Length: 317
Image (cartoon, rainbow, N blue to C red; front, side, top):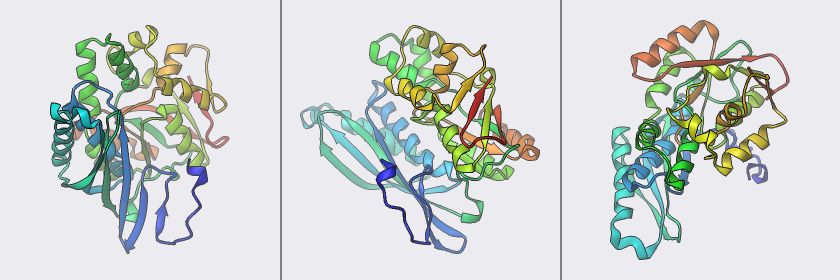
């Protein structure tokens, strides 16, 4: 869809829809960060669905190194189910997560729809001189990931009624976690580039970053964290259509060494919801980044590096 948008010639547009969020300069040292995201329920509990959707929407502001200011609700819901109180629980979950982020929810829009959908418009601000973006990675940077993969696999198992309770609980806690601390750590360490890992999977989002930065990438599959239990669920066939499409879309750009099995390849392309930040950090700043992440209670997994080579090419060992 982005290919059909006319390019902007407004010099105040610093980042367009090709990155995680749009960035619009207001004045020297100050710019708006604006994004929106919404999706259908991926868990059965409406309150958890609201929390996850809000964390996911706010994540794009954090991925740019920004600070969220306020949010607006986006809700599609079947009118005949309104008396059940489910819509209220969804919105309450979103509001509680926004409150955790220090962000007021100041309105929104709703429509009658056969299938529930929920998300947010998130508006934030960033200093353009300190902004993270997908086109600032350099060869020699280390790649650090802050959340485990597998939420798409878990959501598919939930729909099939076969996801163990403890696996679901771990996934919900991970998806509902804000990327605020990860963004703060990246900025404190002097990182230049980042993206949040969502619907295109790790390989898809890394490929976008590598192409925009005109570098190649290497991933060590054994270093990539996974949610507990997801490998078994994937091996049992609980693979979402989006994940399969991600593998197909990345087929020409990603090459695997022989010891990376089919399940591992699938998990690297798993379509995530509210995934972690993938941070490209200058190697001499990586120890600081890892320390800053741990100090904020975040996960810190060094999963690969950027290299000279064909833009967007990824090698997985």
